[in-house]
Length: 388
Ligand SMILES: *[C@@H]1O[C@H](CO)[C@@H](O)[C@H](O)[C@H]1NC(C)=O
Image 1 (cartoon, helix red, strand yellow):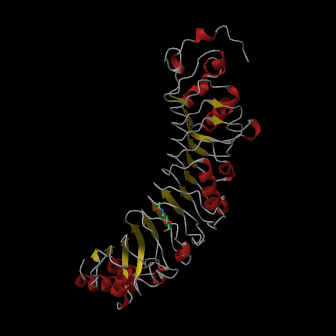
Image 2 (cartoon, protein in one colour):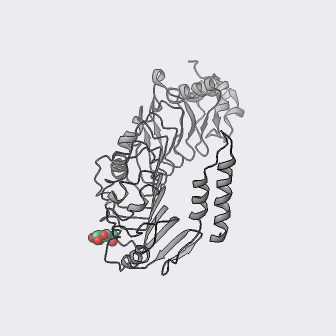
C-alpha cells in the first residue's frame, strides 16, 4: 500500500470514532499504525524494504546505523540483519535510531559470532513481539540486549552453536515461547536459572542433546517457569533417560520425547498428574518398570501415551492397568503401540481376557506371535492362565 492510500483510511477511522456510539468504538490509532507498519515510507538503501520488512544483507553494522540515524520515528514490521562474516563490530547501540520494529531477525553466515550491544534496539523495546537468531556462534552474545523488551512473545533460535548463558532474557509475563532448534554445543552453558516466569512453550527439539546438555538447558530455562509451562518438545535428540526436572512441571499438557535413545522407563519416571499427552515413539525402550506412569494412589490422567516403534514386548498390569482404567473412567484416551508387538502369553491375560473394556483405549496393539490384533486374538490362548 502506498502512502496516498494511508490518509483516507486514517480519516475513515477517525470518522468511525467520532460517529461511534458507546460499545462500538474503533481504535483509530491502531488502524493508522497497522497501515503505516506495512509500508516502506523512507529510503532504506543499501538495505531493501518490502511491505514494511527491511532486510540488510551483509551491510556493515556501522553503515546500517548511518541509514537509520537521520530518520524520524516511524514503525516497521520487521528488520532482518544478516551479518557479514567479516563484521568486526558488535551491533551498536541504537542501530535503528528512532525506528520501531515488531520483529527482529539476526542472522549470521558460516556460524560467525553474534555480538549485540545492550541498547542496540532501544527504540523498539516496547514494540518487539518476536525475535529470531539464525546460524550464529553465540559464545560472545549477551542477551542483555533483550532485557527491556517487555512485549516480547516469541524467541526462536535456529542452527546456532556455542551457547554460554541465557542471562539477560526478558523476565516479563508476556514472554511465552522459547524455541531452540537445529542447534548444538551446550556443554559450556551456565545453568544458573533465568527468570522466565510466564514461559508456556519450550521447544528444544532437533539439537542432538545428550542427557547432560538437556539437564543444563532445562535447569536454566525451565526452573522459574515450572507453573506456567504447558508444552515441552524434546524430540530428535540423544536422550537416554527421561530428564528428572520434567516431573516438577505440574501443568504440562504436551510432552514429546520421540526419536531419542531412551531404553528404560523407571518407576515413577512419568508419574505426571495430567491431563497430559506424552510421545515416546521411536526410542529404544526395552524395559518398563512397575509404576513407570505412577502408582495406584497418585496416578494422574493421560490423554495419549505414544509408545510406537519401541523394543519392549511385555505389557504388565502393574504398569498399564491403572493408566487404561483412568482413560476408561475419563471416557477418552489412547495408548499407542504401533510396531511394538507384545507377547500374548499369560502376562497379558489381565487385559485381553479379563478387561476387554479397556481394549478400546489400546491402539495398534498386536501379538508378537502371529501379528493378530489384541481385540481379534483367540482367547483360547489364555485358557490355561491363572485368574488374577
Ligand atoms: C565461536 O566463537 C569463539 C569466539 O570467537 C571461537 O573461539 C570459537 O572457535 C567459535 N566456534 C566455532 C565452532 O567456530
